[in-house]
Length: 336
Image (cartoon, rainbow, N blue to C red):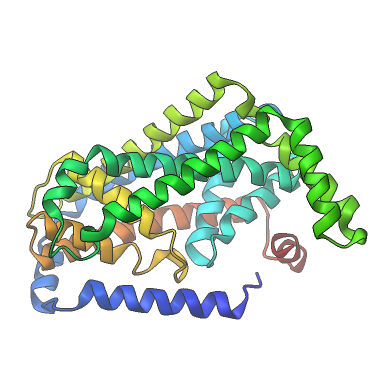
């Protein structure tokens, strides 16, 4: 898959910066001692809970795609895991486009329509992540000051809330008023793009709006929102279970806050697998709660590996099982 060089180097530079921030002042002998003493049996239920959350993600995608095509959740689950694998090994969240391309190959769903549903997923995920932060604002207020990333997160959360809620409002309006959206889109296409692209862009616009059809029902919007909450509570459950492998204890709400801040940080361009952008804010949150740096680093890095490795291996397995290869045609489809 072709990734622009500037995207790669920008992501790598950001990751190096965040790794430095997360490891400065860390005593490696204490860190290594913490990692050696951990009880890794707790990773087993943690990974199980996480995969349950991935299954719910597959159901949510199946639900969003219903107006376009009824596809069983068991068919969606392997495609979702392949998308995770793509996000974990390629920069710029290329896995999101990859799963849209694979869905087109397997089920004939237009890429632009499935990408619309994927963007809707990400908007709802962002709203839930920010709600996790706002639910814990009272706790967050106690942690500001000499708490690194955490000290400025309130302002970032307010800006992020405006961005995500604004995007959600635009998508809801586009879904509820498709004809108006088509006319507005046609007007913009006619004035902002060369004439030779008008027909193709108009087709993409129509298919993209088809992907928003599920948002035309308030009940559907509520279902997607509630499902998103369940997904992120299950992921926080993994944080909580992995915590038991280490010698510290914070509340489930503290881990909700950590989950929200970490996932907000991973929206920053970085090297594949969110290297650094996951770890530095995670360590900062736990340190702000009084967890010593070595334990916070050992836990956060272990959690990161437990989030990255199993889903990447499962995605690679499904990619092989489905008989899909990294051929030139697949690369071209994904890049396009």
